[in-house]
Length: 394
Image 1: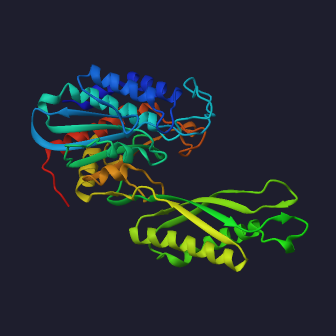
Image 2: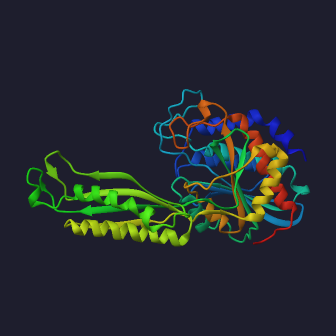
Image 3: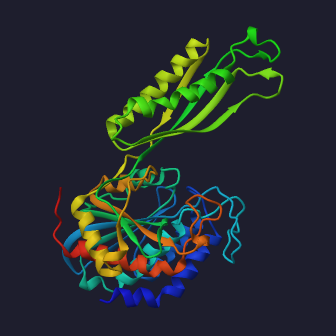
């Protein structure tokens, strides 16, 4: 089958679909319209999709014409609670919501692949499990779908997916073996003191002052408790406290994120945040209470599967357009699907101008639509390649 010609011929349709999704963004577990379009089109292509998996997820299975492995391909569907500041015809029609991470493109790509490969089912071995997932941005969608039996009765051999990226030029495939994306944990920290009049600080225990020192002290954890050759991040992202200029509050709330790759490091970071915050607070007469919200594990690409992706990408886009991806501290619950079997999660570049060069989660983030058919060509060929080869488990 000539997949390149098929996807090239569908370029206009893919662009129309992506822009429709972009104009109608739905955030975590609200992807009713998006999931409905996906499921309806899958039915027209001959599938019997399962709707409402894990809330708003969709699962469809393509059975090949002969025995072979089972390959799972996943796309995330959710948008972000971010305003859309682009001046384009397909700008978000929903105030405060925006596809600022490329998930509209992911859904379009995998949906088009499912439609194209449906017509080739008899010539393919094995089977393909197409997963359209909600709520990746809050890293809850994969967990919800798996808990709802998304893979009940299915033994998966390989897991693959792509993430569109403004970090790479349009058409470039970036992939790495081993750890690729960090485990993202979140935390809430409550600093408690005893409030009172701001003119009489000697009569209170000031949680604002304690919070300031806790924030500074926490920044020493990565520098002094993590091996310099390891990678980790602790970032404070929210501080809340106080009601008026002349009142010292009873408490201050701090929130942030902990990112790591090594499971042991992950545990050390959380325990050190608690120890440092509690110690600093106690020394100043207050207290600290930490709550950690554990996210998915790190995304770790299998060496054998990654090499298959590289080989296919070189064939489709050329040697010069295949790069080694850096390890990044961003997280993705694709890791939970990849816990089911060996796999590879790779990046496909969509940056071709200033307009498509904004970072992910920026209000002006956009993708070069011309990259969609080529991205679909790469991912579809990866899926077919994995179906045709015997699985090498590691």
